[in-house]
Picture 1: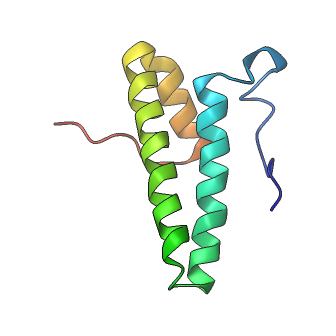
Picture 2 (picture 1 turned 90 degrees about the vertical axis):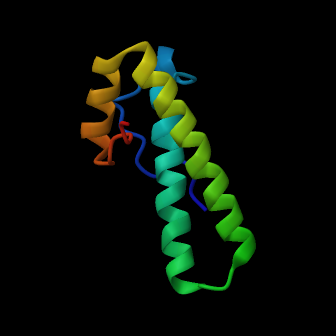
Length: 88
């Protein structure tokens, strides 16, 4: 598995390797690769559990980012092409 598929350099600079944006980008790439794997291997239950954990971690990071800086959050959501958080 290739780790850095398409971490966009416009999103992450060298100073921001551990930032919430870079982590969300990395987790999004992992989610995409695991989703493609599960389309081929539907009964891989351990992979399904790992995918749920990764989705939960990305969700927690997105909640943190939306509370800290809504502009950075909206920019990240639009650049990655993922849905935003549900509002109550």
